[in-house]
Each structure stands twice: as C-alpha cells, then as structure tokens.
Image (tube, rainbow, N blue to C red; front, top):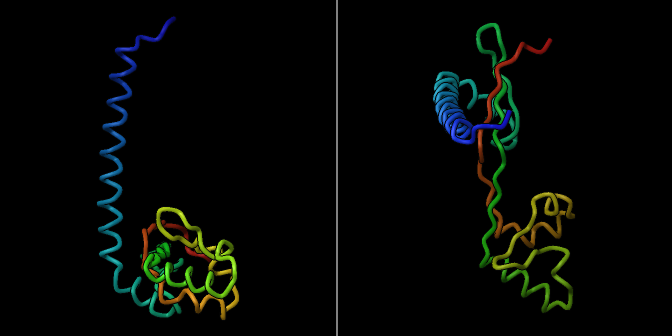
Length: 141
C-alpha cells in the first residue's frame, strides 16, 4: 500500500513537536536536579584540579554522574602573533596552527605538544566549562 504523504507529513510534524516538548521537559528536569545538588556538585569539582570532567555525587540511594565538558577558545589576535613569530623564526607554523578565516588549534593537538611548545600558545588559550550532562545511575560498589 502506498504511503499517504499528507498523513506522513502530519505524523512527522506531530512527532517533531512531541520530541521538542520532551526535550524541553528533559532540560527542565535536569536543571532542577543540578540546582538541587549544586552544593555537592561544586564541592566535588573543587576537589579536582580543573572544573570540568566527570564527578559522581550521592543522590539518595543512587549516584548522580555529572560531566562538564571542557570548552577551549583561542584568541585570534594572540595566535596571529604566534604564527608570525614562528614564521619569523624560519619555521613552518602549519603543524601548530590551522589558518583558515581565523586561527584555530584543535585541543587534541595542543595537549600532545611538549610544555615548552604549549607555553607559546598559552596567552591565546581560554578554557571554559562547556555543556553539562547528567546521568542517574546505581552507586558504584
């Protein structure tokens, strides 16, 4: 039997609308959970050397797993100066910096460099907390 495209469009629209409602409900519930446990979460992150990554806090008889993503931003003005300095030193900046419309350095590349190389770029790098994800799970033994 052929698919009735009018009905299919209506069903897809209804599904999309319901998914948007569920996503909104999920965000509200996650925000409420984060607010409820913010003191325990903040205390757990203070024990870490950096304010991102995964922590677990006790939530009643369950465990609340919280993951804060690391968000790195680069100053294009500062990277431009580093790019020019590397070039002036007679070296190729391509292994270090992607030059497109703006400068960018993939975080994986940066973390793989030796500390003396990373220090060239430190003034151009800002690390912020990115997206937060939570998961409620059984406590780890």
